[in-house]
Length: 68
Image (cartoon, rainbow, N blue to C red; front, side):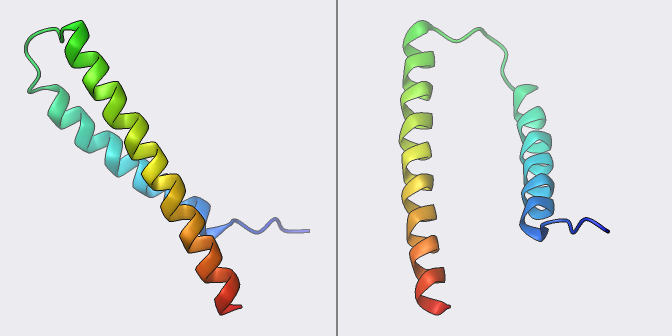
């Protein structure tokens, strides 16, 4: 039996690789170590962004259910 590859997984993998490539480019621009305050600020922004993505995902899942 041939295992089917989930197309969304493939898209997520491609997106992840593109994001990592962009990050690598920006990492080269960082010259000095970040302060603890800077790290906490970025950490907070990441947490907020994660929650936003989770909320968007929930909305997309509901929209998909409604469309089916």
